[in-house]
Image 1 (spheres, helix red, strand yellow):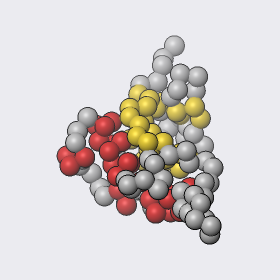
Image 2: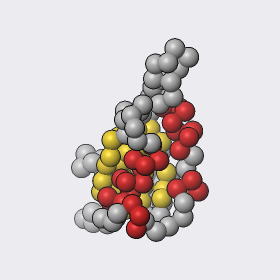
Image 3: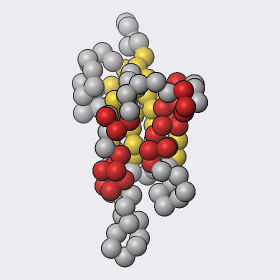
Length: 119
């Protein structure tokens, strides 16, 4: 399980050694029911973190790292009445060297590894 420290970094043993610290590099807001797709918000957030355009991203396809339709279904799908179904929580996954967090409130946050503080 990842833990957020007082300085906003995320650390934990889910994705790498306990010495890894994470610093937020970028974030994007996904508007459920809007014109954009969650996949697009994730790709743009990763591109922002890398300081490149989305067309310049290099690496494996996003679908090899995460099942975006499953996240949409859990957090953002319409319920039987047509209202948005909002699950509560977040999903974290690795994409290349980044930790990507999709929150149920629509925020997509991208973290990059940083050097741990040494005493």
